[in-house]
Amino acid sequence: MSTETKNKDILRGGQFLVKETPCEDVFTLEDLTEEQKMMRESTKEFVDRELWAHWERFEKKDYAYTEECMRKAGELGLLSVAVPEAYGGMGMGFVSTMLVCDYISGATGSFSTAFGAHTGIGTMPITLYGTEEQKQKYVPRLASGEWFGAYCLTEPGAGSDANSGKTKAVLSDDGKYYSITGQKMWISNAGFCNMFIVFARIEDDKNITGFIVENNPENGITLGDEEKKLGIHSSSTRQVFFNETRVPVENMLSERGNGFKIAMNALNIGRIKLAAACLEAQRRVLNEATKYANERIQFKTPIMNFGAIKAKIADMATNAYVDESASYRAAKNIEDRIAIRESEGNSHQEAELKGVEEYAIECSILKVAVSEHVQHTTDEGIQIFGGMGFSADTPMESAWRDARISRIYEGTNEINRMLAVGMLVKKAMKGHVDLLGPATAVGEELMGIPSFDTPDFSQLFSEEKDLVARMKKVFLMIAGSAVQKFGPDLEQHQMLLQSAADILIQVYLAESTILRTEKNAKRFGEEAQATQIAMSKLYLYRAVDIVIQKGKEAIVSFAEGDEQRMMLMGLKRFTKYTNQPNVVALRTQIADKVAADNGYTFD
Ligand SMILES: Cc1cc2nc3c(=O)[nH]c(=O)nc-3n(C[C@H](O)[C@H](O)[C@H](O)COP(=O)(O)OP(=O)(O)OC[C@H]3O[C@@H](n4cnc5c(N)ncnc54)[C@H](O)[C@@H]3O)c2cc1C
Image (cartoon, rainbow, N blue to C red):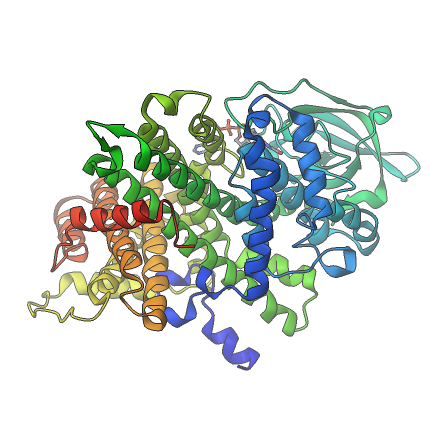
């Protein structure tokens, strides 16, 4: 396929909302190469041997053990997957990076946070924005695990409002170094890192600037005590104080005032990787819960035989399957976009930056959805274990606590919901995604007389795909009217934006899942995909419910009278099933398969 054709065919970021994607165009976990499968296996082996077998140590705040495991991961090359070969890395594609991030993160949030902070926000700013000298000097050490990195953006007064930090960088009289003074907080890996990416403000610049700062206590750097946290007990999290810390001018990252952009782009990548980091945790929790439910006898029968437990198992499996489907679909879009940009003459650095930026909407969607699913799954894991789930002697309790942080860091879920919708509207304004045309068409459809023909839904997923297309219309109807009504003031209407984001999230997740299963049903047969088909149908049913609820909330918040009535009628029409699925039967079918396999076997 020529670059031009490929470029035309690959969805741009946010375009999933207005374009139909053929199932053959989505990448799925079933498309992994042999090399990627081997990499997955060796990652799993590492996790089972070094992390899962010692999970109590992570709960006992054994920070040294986290560091030791990070070093071992470095020796095995697991820290260097995303790093270009020129800087001592494996230079593998975005899908492989996601894969390692996914499977390495399931055993304990302590290690996955250390891993994510080092390989993502601790290293990526240099690979993406560093000069050749900076990359040669720092990246090989970071890739091998000889050095560890940390990322200092947050301050006591600057959390979500990240560009408001007070840390100062003052140029020396001889122009040779900056003197950095300020307080950073919640810094992951602070206790054992060799290098910080630090964001500071020069004079009264509007935007902050990024610096690479080596960790040298004799250079005005001191650390606070380890934070006492709800979860991720062995992830080192400390305050970092800089007191006239000298940083050579050549350690500035990119240009003066470019720090906010660096910080945000590092977070875009961090967000999709965080979604990946919440996948294996779901599979492992489900596996443990399934084993327990199969073995635990109450009322003379394994509790797995109870419908109340089956419903939980079915929803947990479905969430994991859905999240995999959407995460790897986006990862491959990013990988392809990077390849296209490289073939057009961009450097790898530039191509990667632009490739991820293109899918920032999907990155935010995934961060929110998957972090909330892992929370739900760990919660149900505790419930299935009953009293034992509440005990610190089983891994459910720590999994539940560890999962909680994912909704907070890498931009809170509230911020990411608003970003997802806000970025989409901005793309539409710039003409990168045509929302106006489809939104106008939906408006016209609403004024017209609905068709009373009985549709032919005999093909696999024909009704489901029709419903997804109509869910997209719900978003276009609401977002289109809201933009018209509020214009640039839309960002002030946060409750409306949160509801719109929930609809957008459900569209992306439900569509990705159905397309994955459709693709696999075509090549492996419907019988082989029977449980996946059931999971796709179950998820869509739940997604439609959310769309109805959030759609109503959004519509009545800003539309009145005839307009409100018309939109509510539209909502009803766009979310209508011709054939209501029997979700009890679907859940039973899914749970029975998971129970029979004694765990999750769909990845
Ligand atoms: C364990 C841990 C590790 C971390 N690691 C790092 C790290 O390595 N490096 C780093 O730089 N930072 C790190 N952080 C910081 C993290 O990124 C911030 O905690 C996060 O961005 C939220 O900032 P905040 O805590 O100041 O909350 P705030 O920004 O004060 O937010 C509080 C609440 O208000 C909401 N809110 C804030 N602004 C808005 C708005 N405009 N509209 C609507 N709602 C809003 C938020 O969603 C949230 O619910 C870490 C945090 C923790 C807890």
